[in-house]
Length: 70
Image (cartoon, rainbow, N blue to C red; front, side, top):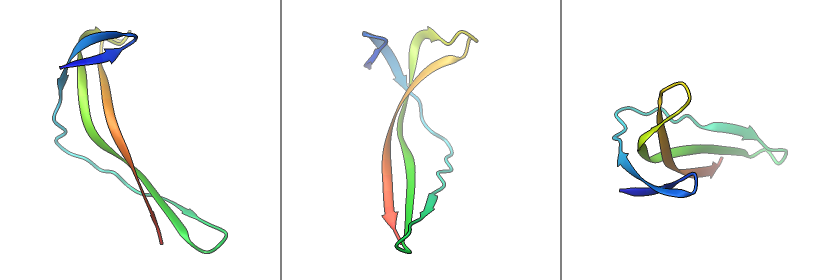
């Protein structure tokens, strides 16, 4: 698959997520409600042929935000 990385189209491979822990962040509001927020990982791609300065792979990812009110 091709993705945009630093202004160019490069090859990327989707990497399966084997485990996940996505805790909620909670915010007590002045009106006594609690705002609950978390970001959920949707997809992870490893950029082929690119590495960070320390030699680790370069990843791109897609997330979605989930919000609820208690």
